[in-house]
Length: 309
View 1 (cartoon, rainbow, N blue to C red):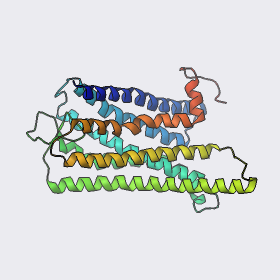
View 2 (view 1 turned 120 degrees about the vertical axis):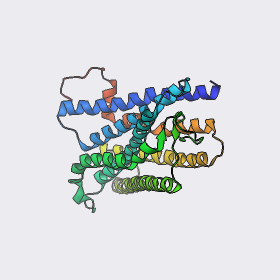
View 3 (view 1 turned 45 degrees about the vertical axis):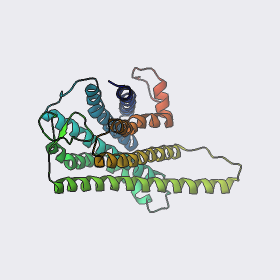
View 4 (view 1 turned 90 degrees about the vertical axis):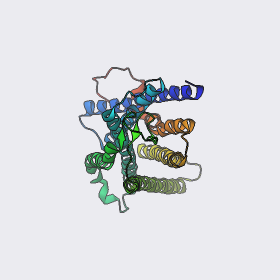
């Protein structure tokens, strides 16, 4: 194992350890909220759903990558390759859908009561659970083609391997099928990226308008204390910005990899590391920007039975 491959394995291991730990912590916080308040508010439900998708994303790809890097070749058969890549694709789809849902929910939450969004403020929280269930159905159906396009590394004579998995091979399919699948998945991603970007832009506009209004009423020397909704909006704007930047970088890098006649292990490894940055960084961005989660982080590891107040 050369130095670049060793560095890749170490970074992958760090992403798994910290990323999975952070996402599991978010799930524990949501479970603690349910156990103490006997209800789960819509925002916590979305966060828990995003943490679950991130955990699936990290485990389904990073662990096999590490095993492959440490010399375990051909350790997956046809069924394992299909299942792992299918879980990975579904998890990636769930992450983009949930991030979009999170940004739209917060945009509706901070919208002025006099705006057109005021009518849906009371009804939108009821749509969160159905929306999460719909995202599962949508992505499970969209990624069904993965099950027939992948096989184990030893069961094909094709030299073109799946660009995202170094230990599985692709089955030759028609150009039309490949093009249709690529267009459908691209349109799905562009729709959700565009929607979350629009929601974030709207939140920036609302926050800026509110800031100007407050400064006008109280004078230029007045610095208002940010409310919990404003802090949550800023957190989600940062989260969406991170996702859009990483998504754009990943799309550009993949276009280069797919058009290269010779595979570049260094570029492939760096692309894989950056692809999982969102899943690994996302929970810590949530924790650092949420006072409730920071307080929970400082508490003992045991689950308390006392009243949360």
